[in-house]
View 1 (cartoon, rainbow, N blue to C red):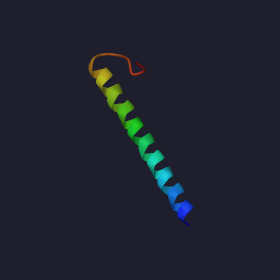
View 2: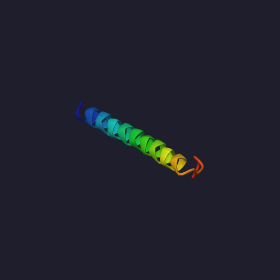
View 3: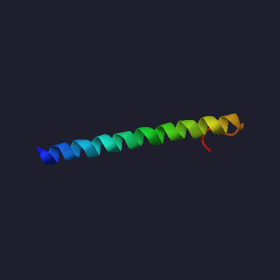
View 4: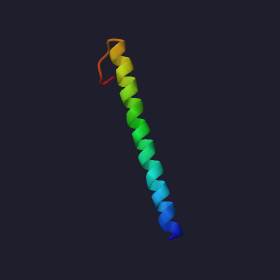
Length: 41
C-alpha cells in the first residue's frame, strides 16, 4: 500500500508538471503573438 501511494504521488507530480509546462507554452505563445511573431517560435 505504501509503494502504491508513492506511485500515485509521483504520477500526480508528473501530471502537474506536464500541465504547468503546457501552460507556460501557451503563455509564451501568447506573448510571441503580442510581439507579432509566429506561434511556432
